[in-house]
Image 1 (cartoon, rainbow, N blue to C red):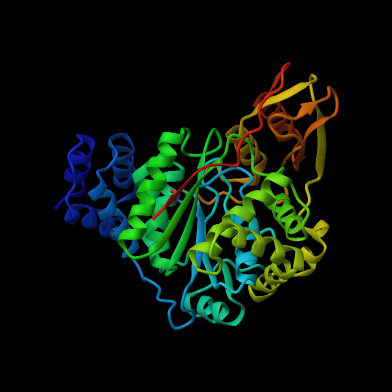
Image 2: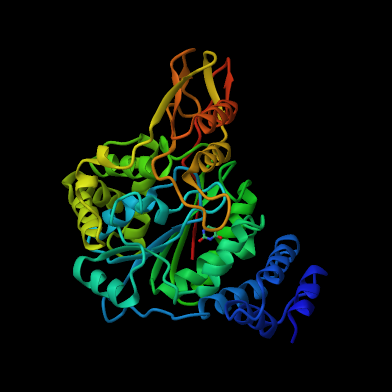
Length: 435
Ligand code: URA
């Protein structure tokens, strides 16, 4: 078999066999297929798509490209959640400790920023000392001791995704249903969770721009997980404006901490409660949606979720002084509130543009290996439908470079549009798809 023949077949829209997909994935992770051929194959998949069977083969080839964890000796039922990627999406930072505080073991392997979307690993690394590179033995020990782990993907788990994820980020091949299914579901299968809630984002700040595409992605992932015996639910949620107020690594950690103390933005808190409730129901901790929501709210109010977060940070080497007093977290040198250019109802906030502004400020990567500035970001002060008064602060930029601040100010201003007549608020969720 030759890589060039597989690329040619895919380019011409011909279905690949399971052997060909396995050959390609194995060849790539062992360095026999170079990045430039993998990039060509990714683009061919992006343009031609994949059949259901090819997607299945790809997911399993990626999942079994490394170790597959079995957590049964540590916990009888492990729950996980995964987002398809958005702007201001710090949900895992609240939901994972909340659900763990309800007594459900949570082992989550989380990723870095991808394109304009942020990554939980980058956010957690704003906390000095926090380790995102736990190995399997450390992960299991921590899961058994405190019932929660939020770490980066280990080199041994789904290594094909680890390599392809980075390549997709710089070859404009992120927004592809089969590649996202392969990426997310291979990690979930390899990481050993029994019950998985997927938060599938839809809108201008998501990889899926339409409800139709988000549904296709959600259905494909739910089917994939159900076929390999996982309990699955997917929620399709709105990403036509940033989630919460903060976009940027340390700023988002601070907002998550506020939320764990029952503060934070209303939309973000509500979103977290719904995702947590789904995780509780999927793992039989609650019998219906009302009971699950009540349990989630009570656990937040009791402070148990915050304590679980703190235990996790401590267990993973993080300096808890930075989360006890979040004003210690990395802070930008230039903080500029930007006034609204006019009065009116906020009609739209382009979340992808805000994500891109944060990447340009240094909060994300423009190319492989770029360092991250954890302190920079944007805080939006209004939600779609809010009435805004001219000259009140519309958003605040946190920057460390004057020229970058000016560029971000222009981009974020252009991302806001106004209407003279009232505008409907955006829903948080559109659909629920169960396995
Ligand atoms: N999150 C992932 O883990 N992979 C993708 O491809 C997109 C979002």
